[in-house]
Length: 333
Image (cartoon, rainbow, N blue to C red):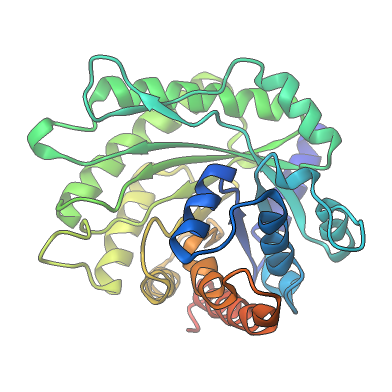
């Protein structure tokens, strides 16, 4: 019965034409973005910003689920209604970020490890009682051929922990999203990105299998295969689609619940164009959609600037990008 419930959540989250909103920025990260734009860095301002996003017209038409930060899952709108309850009334599934963040990996300069396994089962039980039906765990890999990174040691350490998280999540009736992000920063070529992602997904799925994780109740959140943003030969949407789908066809098992894309520092139009090209070229049976953060939110945040008089315009802009990516996941941009 538990497995059937997990499958149902996965099916809902991947249902067309919608995507998953990544609204799981930590308070620290959110405040950094506010500071850049001169917005007050307070608990109340963060709540107002999240309320602006979640109450945007047609939000539930384009969004199937929202990844929340632990602060947000406890917050309410101006009428005193929990955001989680607001989602449930409109058919949007609440999720939660559960990893403990990045720390330096000892003896491996410039590489990082994701913490958070300690006490994870208890935290998942608490978040489940607050309404979360799925969770997310992220680790990051930076491509630097001169430093031979990411190293095999760091890949195996991070993905072993990620697989353990996925096993714990499913045991608690929570759908795990696994997010091994390959950073867009750097000057690597698209071929180098493809090679690294191929290595990562081989290890990831071997690890998930070793921990007896049910792939049908797992969602992969992935970077797109593309040249680093400092590379002089930038990748076209058609190349991004071709290289990305090649990795998927070779490394991602067909029985996985679904694939969602992170934007990873891409400009909003760039992320949408690449998503659209992937949808057009894909012949895979695996359902795919978007799970963007800044590529969806940044234009609206810049329009809002923490001022109530700007809220309507900011929501209109946010709705525009939601619709744009909804069309892109269908290859109809």
